[in-house]
Image (cartoon, rainbow, N blue to C red; front, side, top):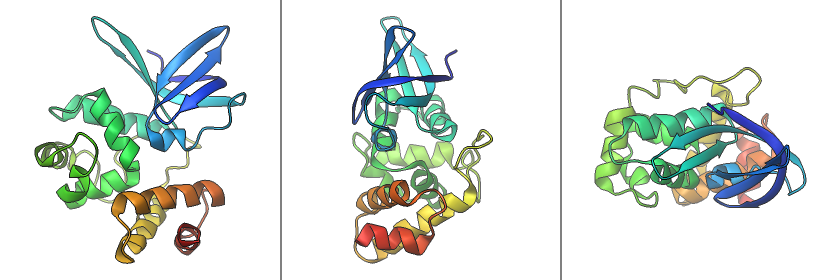
Length: 199
């Protein structure tokens, strides 16, 4: 099993990256939330991966953190009707902290706005994953040194909630907060994220 890949990023689009390693170019399917965190082509990059084997294809999926990869695996393994393409679409629209929050709170309307996800699939996401995402913080394993601490997730969720209260759509607020977090770093406060998103 290939659990990660590290090499030179040769090209990237919002849904795909090509990483060169030992003379081979690996095509890796990624969500937009991972593409936002990629360096410029030519830089070294590491993605946490999952390979899906089918009769007619072997497809490599990559994510910025092990927690993102594990959430992707959770969706395709446990939610009826959600395959890799649908899971990538969901994770491209909303970040994992916001997805987990929506699942825990049963926010079917927010989940149903993801591309290719109707009300029935959104309901299945809630029913089939609610007990698996934990009660207070992510129930997913995170490797040491990764920046998906519960505090960072809470800061992200609080900033998104504040922007939604100001009239932003949830997906737009989530995207603005992700951009702010990339610019300010992992220790940014909720207030700093909100100011960056509004500025």
